[in-house]
Length: 474
Image (tube, rainbow, N blue to C red; front, side, top):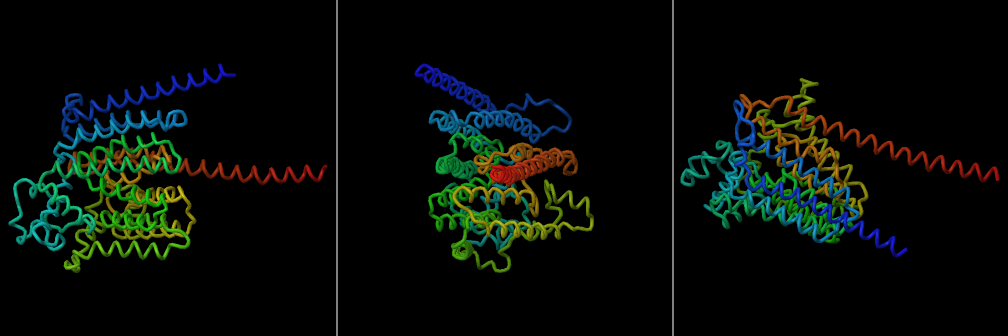
């Protein structure tokens, strides 16, 4: 008996070391790519019209293959090595290294949003309300320079970013001034904090901590935050922090943090429905609304200009980007206008939120329903679906791994092809490659789940009939 137990333990030890070696190997390969990044452009075949975007997509897709292999390795062997401290350290070490390799790079090759963040911070530091004037306004001429101002997009329009974001832009500007690397470093700091909080959240609900790799090694998360410096670094941190506070039964602070997340990027506000339960719905809504409004008070002087660029963004077809379901509906029903569909999608998201609001959510179910709402948000995105918006779903995949969403977080990079395409038109094949697997896999998962539930009900029902028949016969 003891010999069998020893053999079993030895076998598990060898298996664990093999998994650890596999993760280290995949991490080293990824580390080389992240370290050399765009310097590896000579490995991408030369062709007419090739740009930095094509190089980026090639590197990203290669890293995605490595990432998916690592995810598969972790999920397949979670029961034997999922809570290994050595494995967790290795995962986090590589994750931080990947990010540090990208912070010092100029983000303009993919996105210029970071320059708008810095500009809005500079405007506030000068004592001006950022909603009051667009960057091109004569009133802001003294603030212009030859480093940040030329890289700002939509100079003739006021800012689109909510009040919560503006507060952080000013704080970041006080810390980093005009240094792009400094601002990206701050976003990456919050991103690293997200990894640590997600690890604690996984442990709190009894999941293998190694699952943090699903977020920590995701190329979309790494590039869009550490390289492009997108606001999702802060937003996702606030959402995960709110979920963690909720797990600790600190529901009011959790709702306040979610309100801050909603005031940084509007879409996390939808997740409030997952946080509220019978007995705290009205109180939770009041706390959320009060915190949200409080963040807007410093900018109330802008009056009717407070929405900024947002109304144009939602209603102007020119702002459409990487649309999936919305694009399909516009093709099938030409009479449905872009602005009308935006309004219908917002109503559909509100309906989904109401449906979740009146569900009873206990413990990890809060995460499950928040995950469902984020999925609907991506499918029913009222305006453009920028690649970095998809980051919000990645932490939830550590709890509920999904082939559909894991694939989509990797395939969404293809949407950058639009910026390198003639006349800036998104090729139809890109949308097909992105969305067809997503919708097919989601539909297949739903049908399989429905079939499994139906089979279970039939088993219970017919099992009881069989038991009663046996009792009658006896």
